[in-house]
Amino acid sequence: MHFFTVSNLSAGYGGKPVLEDISFSLDSGCLLGILGANGSGKTTLLKALCNLLPHKGSCILEENVLEKLKPGQMAKLCGYIPQRSGISLDISALDVVLMGFNPHLKLLERPTQAMKTQAARALGLVGLAGKEALNYQTLSEGQKQLCILARTLCTGSRLLFLDEPESALDFRFRYRMLELLQDWLTQAPRAAVVSLHDPFLALNYCHRLLLLSEGRILGSLCPKTDPPHRMEELLSHIYGEISLASCTDRSGRKHLVMLKEASAPIRANILP
Image 1: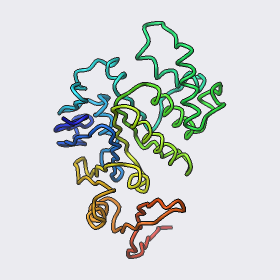
Image 2: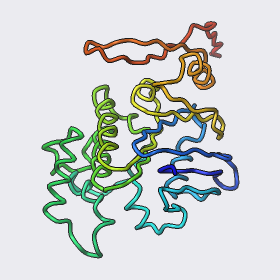
Image 3: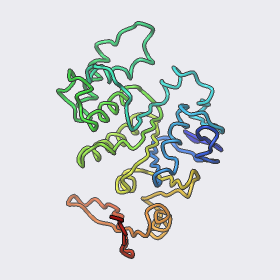
Image 4: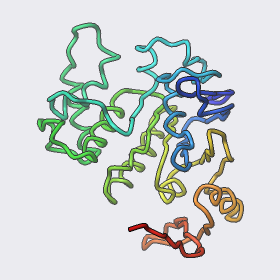
């Protein structure tokens, strides 16, 4: 039995379908990357998976049918990091992280000192040590994303959904976020689904890749084992003509690099 199974999921907005008949499964420890062109349905898929969007089909985490869970139960099992946090209150970065413990607290119960210590440690892990007292609203968009990641790491979730978490991060912290996710997966039976803009991150940090095109699954890839020609063929449907190359860093670790192949020059006629 798989850790997480999605069967025949379809979803949309205002009666207009965006996703049709999406099915896949994950084993524990898997980091699944979602790749697709703009408008392919990546964000819609993540919202449907975590029950933020009405949909057809089923999502089963171990023996839990997510569609049948109450919001509090869902919050204990699954975490979600959107592209924008939606937090508009003037509260500290530490208090934002402490929100992750809310599903585990009774009504009007306050976070314990142990929770505060854990929250501060999580901020340090994501690179925000010493910023616990800062107003969340004064943080950069990238720092806000890291703060939300710290909150999610504190929740004890079994399954994480992340929507383009690297989009507002600089070069260094993009890699740091993916490394933290990989480490998080090893600490308990867990899995994560992350949509990514950057194919380099997807190819080198995700165990599996799901490729979306016009609301359907175009195919799936395992970057560590699939032959380059198969990956190039599928990825070209999203990115145009590409080729994959392998390079080695100074430590000897191999990385996959995606190169855009030359095409005919674009001639734009711009009216005065």
